[in-house]
Length: 87
Image 1 (cartoon, helix red, strand yellow):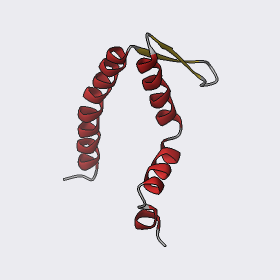
Image 2 (tube, rainbow, N blue to C red):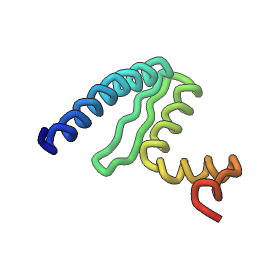
Image 3 (cartoon, rainbow, N blue to C red):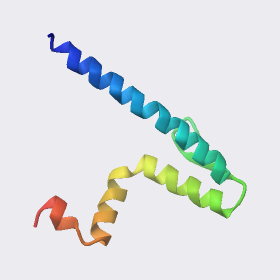
Image 4 (cartoon, helix red, strand yellow):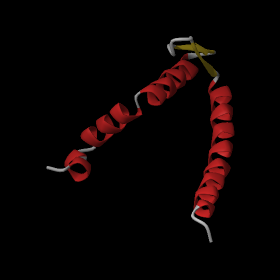
């Protein structure tokens, strides 16, 4: 068994998981009534039907751009910072 086989299996599994997740995200964006458009410089512009869609779009764009900052804030607010980052 070659070493490339596990890599191909992992890649196939990753694609099998990511593609349905992308379809789910597109469906959720449509359900929330928000569309995120990005400029050539990556600046998000949110077009929404109502405040709910606007909040969803802002949160989703922020999570795309600042995932590590968001995770840091979550563990800090939950009081679990030292659990994951040490004393």
